[in-house]
Length: 306
Image (cartoon, rainbow, N blue to C red; front, side, top):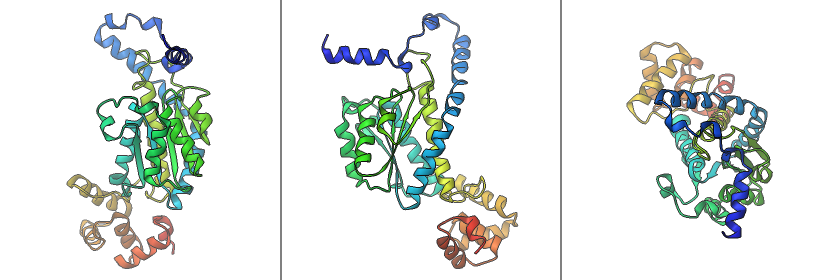
């Protein structure tokens, strides 16, 4: 057994996410319904673990929103499940908040191929993370979120370390206490979800926790940037029939205007929901609404009080 392998084995033995649970050693012999109940019970513990980190999550979001307000980007970086979750969250921002695809970016060790299959050795390279970030032209206004259930994945740690070296804001999201990733980042978020149902399968509780936190980071950041009006997605991009219908409904909920007024406003606003709402509520034309929104940096509430 090589010394490197022995060292890795010793490290894994210290991680809560890798712990073996002898009480579940015969889970494969249980009826399917009992396994499902056990798994469901495990999942119910995740929100509590996230709740313990809410002050840290909020502080990280506030810092990221300031950077993005200056034109910075939100960049997720991870390997395996963690990387896939980052790519997923980033890919959902353009249709939900009308962001440019380059504003929220998901990097996964090994590139796009790693979304569907393992890429040998990619997660073990800190240098690869630095190369991927350099390809983006990282700046001090950007925010990099390293994601790793174990908190020891070299790719995620390397991304955070490289981001700090160029002055970018750094956030480390892990599921073990006192992780190397948290130590490397300015904002360490450690959602300790405990040992998994299947030993070391961090796509389970740890993955669920990461998804919840990433939802918070992107959603609340966008709220802070004025991408919503109350709880309405006023920057939604109507790229298909369902979203076109949702756009009309959002304008209706925000304005309580009759259907014909909504249709006319959306047509004049070229489908931009936020512009249409402002046109109706402030009784202005599309050009005036656009100018007000530009002045308020896209914040609809501020544009309503010129």
